Length: 393
Ligand SMILES: *[C@@H]1O[C@H](CO)[C@@H](O)[C@H](O)[C@H]1NC(C)=O
Ligand SMILES: *[C@@H]1O[C@H](CO)[C@@H](O)[C@H](O)[C@H]1NC(C)=O
Ligand SMILES: *[C@@H]1O[C@H](CO)[C@@H](O)[C@H](O)[C@H]1NC(C)=O
Image (cartoon, rainbow, N blue to C red):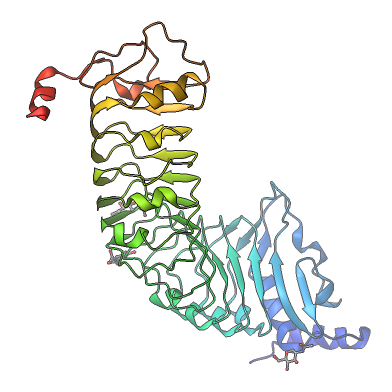
């Protein structure tokens, strides 16, 4: 490493005045980091960064003995405008760093791949900035990395396979970027959260690419394809699943309705087949809308509070348990519009609770009750009978 004369001078000054000494490598790294970043107007995070004092006393700098172990850059208070500038490659000289965070702001440029020299890094979170370029494949060398959160940036390229092989990864949050390519295979058996929504990911998901430890999985708003039944069947600890707005197809295993899920979002794909839960479903929200599901609606779904089955190919009568639950205020949303349903047993005088929404429009029946539907359901109350007859063959 080259010691810039001025930096060395400030370091020697510091030597004169303090006892507990940060090591010189970390001292110079902090100086370089400081030089390439600035407070955005309205933030004064760096006001305490006066290099004639011990850097371990600076805002956001945490030391263990003479080593910097955590760096939390920027004023963390809500509404702080954050920092601008770039991340200096000298960040990788902080060998003992275990945690690096930067608050939302206007940081540009790429994440330097020298970050892989901070071998002890466990927590890396730089969200809601303007990071661009690719995610360095060298992050895979940070074998202790548990959380990687680079969400809400401008990252491009694919997710390096090396990230999938991190042995202790537990949270991977890369949502709202421009990542493309396919999903890597994840080897960590303690991975609990993957959020990749709003990227440009493509391709198939192989059955063994996601570990059963997952509790939160969002792949929404990508262009992923193929069936996922063999993938999902293994993920029996999921409490949140969002696969909406992709090009997935194939059937949905009935078992997933028995997982501890509270929110199941599968809308706007090409899923097809019969929806067959094994037991009464206790998920709060189930959205299966805009797919190609068919067959009769299972009465086991009537305990869902918000159920979106609209824009599919469901047929037959709506089970009477749905009407009972609706009138008892047990259902808040029941969207059945744009299917091929042939009837529902509900009295035209039935008193539907004001807190509940029922939409029956554009099915193979005249809705027995008039209820407000979302505007997108269109003005037509009933599906043209030609389509209905065709359907019944
Ligand atoms: C600081 O880091 C150096 C080099 O990584 C290491 O040898 C030393 O033990 C560390 N000091 C403390 C107090 O952890
Ligand atoms: C996805 O890719 C398309 C075509 O390459 C591009 O137009 C679009 O902006 C990209 N979307 C995101 C979220 O990056
Ligand atoms: C991903 O996007 C980059 C440009 O950011 C492009 O060069 C590359 O071909 C794309 N890869 C895939 C698999 O679409």
